[in-house]
Image 1: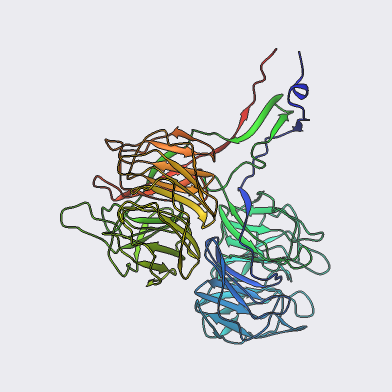
Image 2: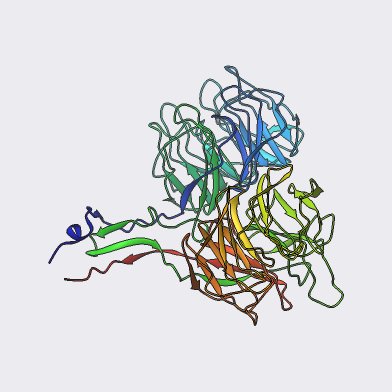
Length: 604
């Protein structure tokens, strides 16, 4: 009998334990416009802010989950700064201007910086936590490691309780009355300790990090019960650790070792972002951390290995076909169908649509989803249904196009409101397909009348490009940008199962859906997507998963639906189905887990 190596032709790694990352995995995202280190950062994986840093800069960049854009410049060119707050109410404090520690602080309102109060003691490499009106900085370097804490009320700084040991280059998070400070450089070495702040005094905690590290410059995020620290150290490491309120556990490693990066300080053990840093030299890399359903919980997915503890040959993989739908939040604005949706399972947007109840008519409502519940925000300027747009957009940046009656209309979402912008070349309604993000989108098909027309969006104007091979309406679409998209299903006017793949230049017909249908929903990217519901007839709960080559039938929706919209830009592993018909004001969440499975080798 031939051995496994002889059959497969490669060496199988032996591991004592299954390679499961406790927290998840880091993935690459859009680079910063410029390489920076020792800069400030706040926000989340889909709404982050980067400012200051080295090489000497006053620049600010904002991140919408997909791309970075320039914001207002700071008054100073500081590095080694401490910071806290959110992207629309951030504080940059102290730091280093040239080689001298500063006492300045600045406040950001989402578009521009203004002066804040001066701190009492000039310092560099302090760690910040809290909000604009209830924040603090702790530690730092003042010629030696500092123990001082200063609290900010939005106007002025006052002294708070001292750290139990002087430290700089540490990481901090939480609130002004429930803060956490971890790690950092002491005199003469580094520390792996954790301290809590109650608004008055610091207390040391029993747990410690597995790795003492410094030079992190506040590269940590979270709260007293969910706090992460990333990279840093001497020598520089790529490790990630998460604090759960009593102890640290190891998370997935960064793609490469780095220090002095910035972090979205509202990150958690399931969703975090870091950007810039020094490898060295300065880098522009952005990495996002995610777990099960949105990011793999398995390191090196697709790895075959031998577990020496169980004496079993194993495989790390997504268990294809095991995904399930679970109940999501209920829409605040009630029943709707034929709406536009985008985002991810934990941060989605739905806009427009048509009310199912008699007399409800077209809707202008926009709602945002936080992974648990929906909340209303600013309406579309024009109430409409049967629209499409940047299906891989975010809750802070999206473009919606077309609508009821073949509207020749485009609106751009900036996280706060919709603005009418350049019209498409071809008016379209009756559910055209869409793909992409707010600055790089694609719209195709629809009813003007039934058309194969395709247009690409560059953030300011529409351009006609190559047509679909099959003209159709009531189809679904998804894709990362105007260079990569997938179109599936629809009506020509007869229902169709046709799937087409866009490569940035032309459409190519690929393998059909298993079910012929129209009025279906979908989400994902060109190589990994989900199609759900639709009119076969009758209405169906059928769900199909696309792996880049073919469709496979997977777990059904809870009930048969049509006219639903979808959101989910990370492929076929997670997303959300929103609204639909009949009488649907609910959403359902789709998740495919990763797992470790045994490999059976047949004997010969």
